[in-house]
Image (cartoon, rainbow over all chains, first blue to last red; front, side):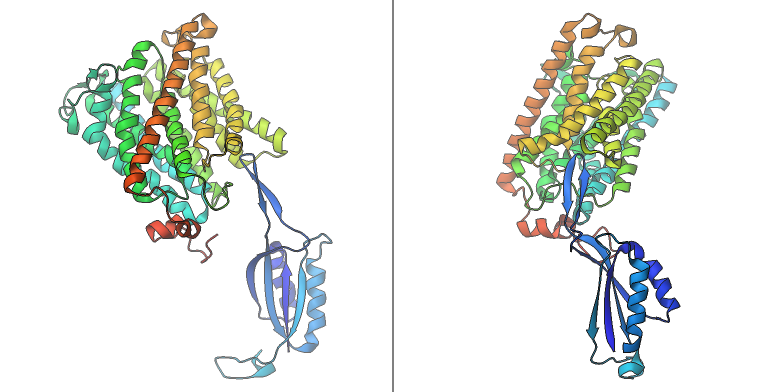
Length: 112
Length: 405
């Protein structure tokens, strides 16, 4: 079992959800986050005064998967969200030790 | 008394009332998400507190019988004796209608000041200051200009409140910014809801028709003239601000458009019923440009006027008073300005500018020092970081998420 943490541009959320469900991913969570990497921030201007916004809004999706689905999902995410510009985001892959479905008590892969 | 005039002025009074809730939207939208309700409270509590004070003592100080050109007497204390008969200042109107119309001006002026102190003033201190300010600043100013006081006798003119409303609120705002000091948090404008600001600004524009046209105190050609100059100057103010903003920062902004509209409205206020239609275009356009410079002043001069009361109402109001001295023409309303051969009017206008800024700034600083003696003006640093909505009112404006911006 692995967990993907996928950080993408906010506008990509609906598109990505549709693409992933086409690849049999039927559950995910997302969080609205703010951060910076190479993209840094942007400048907003109110009444002639610049306001430097250091943290750019991003969407973080978290998906836990069977090991064998990982490559397919990574490829889908990259193909769907890549613009080639700085700020496209990142995917982090983690090992998951266990999983529990609270309703039934199932454990491990069965609980996904 | 005149039925058509009365009907017109009843409507104008309600238009001007709407300007204060509109200001709550305008200022609220410009505030951070953690201060929206506190900011809105300043306008709504002015509707409560300033109205009460107006009824108890404000009206009589402003419009009671003149005492030495400085203040009105106490003959209308608690609005005694105004239920019947015509208003002495406008004999075509019932006294009640005149009192109500003028009450809305007082309420709005107090609310306008709030733009400078948002984000750090203690609510109780704000209330006490506002009460004292109505009695010690607004009422004398209204008396001097409209109640037969010394500025009116001198010959200075102010059609709808360039001095009484805009310069006075801006001078008080500057005093508040100086007395309070800057916010501990980053002081750049970080609007929580610009669409609210745009709607508030649009409603201010609407209310301003009652404010300026109503200041003719009668339905008729002068009111019509004032309404049209108001609309023209506002339109020109939008364009003036947009032009200079586009040049300076490369992009026009929605906040710039509504700020330009406000600048045009402020600039035309003192001259709405004195200048020609063509002049109003010039006054609004230059007003929009000057106020763009005005809002940048605070960085140069180092005061924290959070929502630019000085930059817009101070600069626009001062320009409007001077412009009235320049552009006034007798074919509109019986008095000529500098460009029509009467340099003296420009001098009177200059005196009214200096007197208004000096008197209101000085008295406001005294009042703020007095209030600070009993109630600290500022909230704690902790409260400033948490935001005044929670710290001062135990409420939150937006519960869509638990985030506190």
